[in-house]
Image (tube, rainbow, N blue to C red; front, side, top):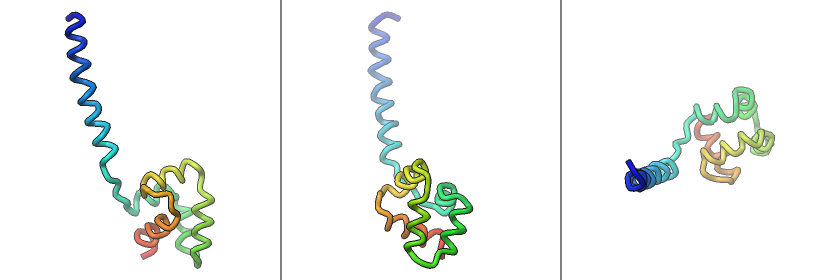
Length: 94
Protein backbone atom coordinates (compact mmCIF):
# COMPACT_ATOMS: atom_id res chain seq x y z
CA UNK A 1 0.00 0.00 0.00
CA UNK A 2 1.52 3.25 -1.05
CA UNK A 3 0.74 6.86 -0.50
CA UNK A 4 -2.56 6.52 -2.34
CA UNK A 5 -3.80 3.86 0.10
CA UNK A 6 -2.89 5.94 3.16
CA UNK A 7 -4.69 8.97 1.75
CA UNK A 8 -7.83 6.90 1.13
CA UNK A 9 -7.73 5.50 4.69
CA UNK A 10 -7.38 8.99 6.17
CA UNK A 11 -10.24 10.25 3.99
CA UNK A 12 -12.48 7.48 5.35
CA UNK A 13 -11.44 7.73 9.02
CA UNK A 14 -11.77 11.50 9.47
CA UNK A 15 -15.48 11.78 8.52
CA UNK A 16 -16.40 8.73 10.59
CA UNK A 17 -14.61 10.17 13.63
CA UNK A 18 -16.40 13.49 13.16
CA UNK A 19 -19.81 11.75 13.16
CA UNK A 20 -18.93 9.95 16.39
CA UNK A 21 -17.78 13.23 17.95
CA UNK A 22 -20.95 15.07 16.90
CA UNK A 23 -23.13 12.25 18.22
CA UNK A 24 -21.48 12.34 21.64
CA UNK A 25 -21.82 16.12 21.86
CA UNK A 26 -25.43 16.30 20.72
CA UNK A 27 -26.64 13.40 22.86
CA UNK A 28 -28.78 14.83 25.67
CA UNK A 29 -27.96 14.09 29.28
CA UNK A 30 -30.75 12.67 31.40
CA UNK A 31 -30.72 13.87 34.98
CA UNK A 32 -31.42 11.03 37.39
CA UNK A 33 -31.32 10.62 41.13
CA UNK A 34 -28.30 8.31 40.88
CA UNK A 35 -26.26 10.83 38.87
CA UNK A 36 -27.04 13.63 41.31
CA UNK A 37 -26.16 11.41 44.29
CA UNK A 38 -22.89 10.45 42.63
CA UNK A 39 -21.91 14.10 42.16
CA UNK A 40 -22.96 15.35 45.60
CA UNK A 41 -22.11 12.30 47.69
CA UNK A 42 -24.14 10.75 50.50
CA UNK A 43 -23.04 13.27 53.13
CA UNK A 44 -24.10 16.32 51.12
CA UNK A 45 -27.38 14.68 50.08
CA UNK A 46 -28.27 14.20 53.75
CA UNK A 47 -27.41 17.85 54.44
CA UNK A 48 -29.62 18.93 51.54
CA UNK A 49 -32.55 16.85 52.78
CA UNK A 50 -32.18 18.35 56.27
CA UNK A 51 -31.81 21.92 54.94
CA UNK A 52 -34.73 24.13 55.84
CA UNK A 53 -34.11 27.10 53.56
CA UNK A 54 -32.94 27.62 50.02
CA UNK A 55 -29.95 29.59 51.31
CA UNK A 56 -28.62 26.52 53.15
CA UNK A 57 -28.86 24.49 49.95
CA UNK A 58 -27.01 27.23 48.04
CA UNK A 59 -24.20 27.16 50.61
CA UNK A 60 -23.87 23.38 50.22
CA UNK A 61 -23.71 23.74 46.43
CA UNK A 62 -21.15 26.53 46.65
CA UNK A 63 -19.08 24.42 49.04
CA UNK A 64 -18.56 21.63 46.50
CA UNK A 65 -15.13 21.04 44.98
CA UNK A 66 -14.43 22.70 41.65
CA UNK A 67 -14.43 19.38 39.76
CA UNK A 68 -17.83 18.41 41.18
CA UNK A 69 -19.25 21.80 40.21
CA UNK A 70 -18.04 21.24 36.64
CA UNK A 71 -19.70 17.81 36.55
CA UNK A 72 -22.92 19.33 37.87
CA UNK A 73 -22.86 22.09 35.24
CA UNK A 74 -22.23 19.50 32.53
CA UNK A 75 -25.03 17.25 33.74
CA UNK A 76 -27.61 20.03 33.96
CA UNK A 77 -26.24 21.90 30.91
CA UNK A 78 -26.59 25.13 32.86
CA UNK A 79 -24.56 27.38 35.13
CA UNK A 80 -27.57 28.75 36.98
CA UNK A 81 -27.90 27.69 40.62
CA UNK A 82 -31.70 27.77 40.33
CA UNK A 83 -31.55 24.89 37.84
CA UNK A 84 -29.54 22.89 40.37
CA UNK A 85 -32.04 23.62 43.12
CA UNK A 86 -34.95 22.65 40.85
CA UNK A 87 -33.24 19.36 39.95
CA UNK A 88 -32.56 18.63 43.63
CA UNK A 89 -36.18 19.28 44.56
CA UNK A 90 -37.41 17.16 41.68
CA UNK A 91 -35.14 14.16 42.22
CA UNK A 92 -34.02 14.25 45.87
CA UNK A 93 -36.66 16.14 47.86
CA UNK A 94 -39.94 14.54 46.84
